[in-house]
Image 1 (cartoon, rainbow, N blue to C red):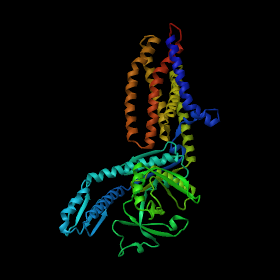
Image 2: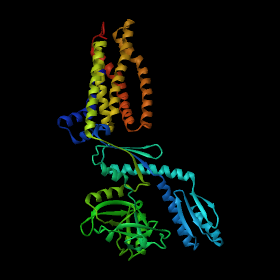
Image 3: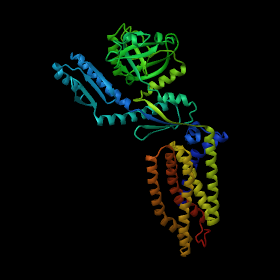
Image 4: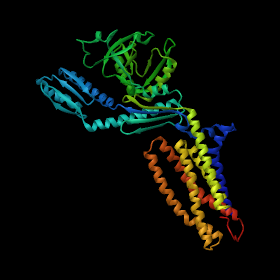
Length: 530
């Protein structure tokens, strides 16, 4: 009897625990019942298809990552040639995987080859005519760069979405270069897209030529000088002037956003919105060296290819800086968020966008509840009609199963989706199937005149391994669905996983304990209503 008491206490404790985690927060939210904040934070999360939000599919332009490496190595070689006093005609990158050097003097060919060894690690060097060389990015390096660009883009998007405060986002890679982004509960879609897709590339470069109202005025013989870039910016360094001026700066930045430690909203000396940033130790060292060597010159603060401000360096600066311009408070907050999360390694293209409204989500929830209720009602009716009083046992075990399922999902922070509701309904079917196997075995044992208690014990013990094997096989399928599926499929897999685990507990432990409780202290039981 003490053993039975222990089982009953265990079952009640499990029920109260998971009812409190999974069911009560839903009732408290619905009917305004008292509940502590930490418990309400555990309330079962709703996915995109139930809560509404935005569904995006983006493609990473991986050529941008290759082009960046190619241009960096090209500029590195240019600086090396300048240091060694080796003149060449041109150095140019015609595409993301190649850069070409022409006009290498025959007398300095050997010296050029020695200098070019600095970039040989990632590029294959091919010899042309009249002192020309073509450097081609190695295929394995290119493939690795493409993979890294997609992974880095996904990680950057995750950081930005987390900064947005979106609850339970889903961000996953699809194929070789696509990223799926699902943001439940997001209503300002344009802001979310702007923050996700902004390159966020911060560069600090010394201005090499006085600001000019036109690009042509900064060109030499109609061309941009080698190793230089001409970038647009706001007039008067962004002090409210709406005109556009152009700045000549070096291609290679002295400091980039990768050297940032933090970025935050602030105000400038005129109390206008601005973004203050702090550099890392290495970034501060580089910034200190550049600013110390260029006192009296302008420093262009470039964000995504546009000069935001170009203050004059009045002293050496080590680790602090500020971006000023014609920003609104919201733009400052967005810019700070983007800079903190890091720059995207490549441009993103939007391939697909779907906005799901809360009304559609409410309709889905209503339909899911109706389907679950009808399914549960039919199951209860069948069990009571076919298995008589023993059907009550199965119904109680089934309700325990569903309560534990909801509690488990809420506890681990899983998200309920529309396919998850399908998994919820399927869990009811699996629970009934388990009880049917047990009850049919008990009926066979009773027909063999083995006695009620012996028949119940035999029914549970002999069916246990059958249930265990089927549940393990189903869990293996669920693992594959979760590993290789996308958002909706994963929602189904998560619900089914917890349903299978809870069902194994309720169909064996809870159901048998209910039989033992019903038989009570009676030594002899002549019949069983089954």
